[in-house]
Length: 229
Image 1: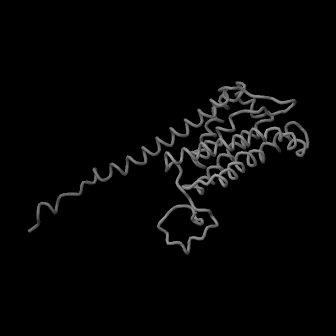
Image 2: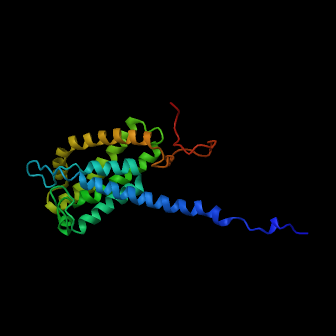
């Protein structure tokens, strides 16, 4: 004789609700974080820009927002926040330092640096995921400088040279005037990111370095490979 309890279907609705709601909450949180950091990059343009001598590209605080986006949100969300900011600038909003905006920005000498911001945020976020959860200061400084300075200059300098019709070497030499400020932004980014990740762990999922050996690991911890302190 069949028991009445055995025919009762499982409570699939109550079991499925948390699983279904989690992606929606996560997606909404991700979108909010992307929007917040796009707004931060815009806000850092409010103090204006500083042009030294005949430099074709002004000095701005907005690169700090790009570095922070990568170091706090990670590669994907950091780059998306920069992409959202660039899209708003292209739509005509005067969000760049000095109140610049519109499509005319994308034919000017600073367009390479704008594109480089995407690469810079992605590089910093990629490395930060592999430095977590410990996030040691010295490697963080090195990787943030690689993404926030080298990667951005790698795109920005050749494009500026092509638009202004000057040799790449001369453009690179002229870009050295930005280095002191950019190095200061790297330090600020790392110190802020260190505090944020200590206070709110889990903003970026820790990853392993590509060259880390996984075959001999016991495999219980998803933390980056490396010698213990």
